[in-house]
Image (cartoon, rainbow, N blue to C red; front, side):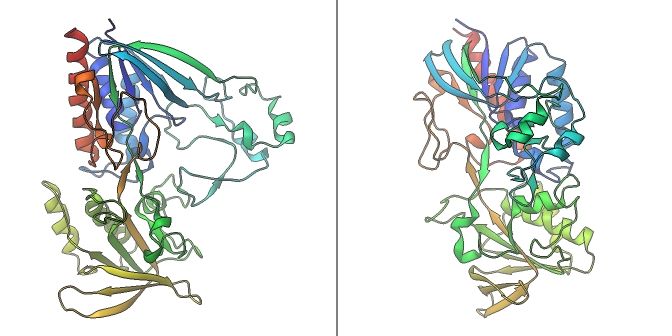
Length: 412
């Protein structure tokens, strides 16, 4: 029987669960498929409740991991299989090569010499990057990662002479013995290209709420300047469309909980950066749970933030100006209108990362991809793997999952 605990996912809830268990003496393994820990929080400009930059909370967590010998983590890693039963699980983990040796060598000069430009998924395709990269300055581990498959023959020849690079590193599979498992696999933004009636993927100046976070982030593709993707211009008329794909039987049939607050937070980004800008929020219902109600009232008290209760029917692009034309019926006045904006932000919902992804047979998910059940098997869900949550509640969920995982391994 094993007292060790596996945490699948190295985002905020996973890190919290791992540290809570490790700090009371349990060996914990974190398995994260990305090159770095931190999850979606790393991609935010600010997060609730204090509107902190992500480095504020994450760097503290990273330091706790560094200082705790009970925590071992694997990046670029995925769980291949889980076999056994509560108290005695065997887990096979496949780890991809990073091709960069341990350490924090300055590789900026090497990066500049690489040939190919690759669409940057971390930046939600707002910019390109090279095959050798580090997502953010505070990334953990503080090591670059190389996508060898995206290098030319000339690139590889040049990289052979770089001390920090190991082109011979191989993929490997390791086996872990654990007593319980916490799934903290997080969420992914709903695919905007499925929202064609709202301009998703077709209207250049129609972006997702997570793209807005990256535009506003100082370490983002525009160094924190909110601009129109079509021309880099300053937007003066910005609109947000709520429930973009959420509460819709054709897309996500549930409320994603935090989207309304995210849009009001982003309205604050705009107003702080552009004091003369006008912000319109098209909504069905504005949901501001608990302590966030005061924040919502403060933002909506701004006379340049205009809430419009009404469902958006169509979004098209003005071919000449690249402006965004929104067709909406005001549910209060009954007036149907076409409104022109410089930039439109779709408040896309939170979809569990496990949606449409194969999972081990011992892990059960519902038709939306959220984890259900499994606690009798010593398998517990944390954070947005279980249901949509904000960062604070995600951390609380991680603590709860850690406690259940500990009870499983010490109670057998």
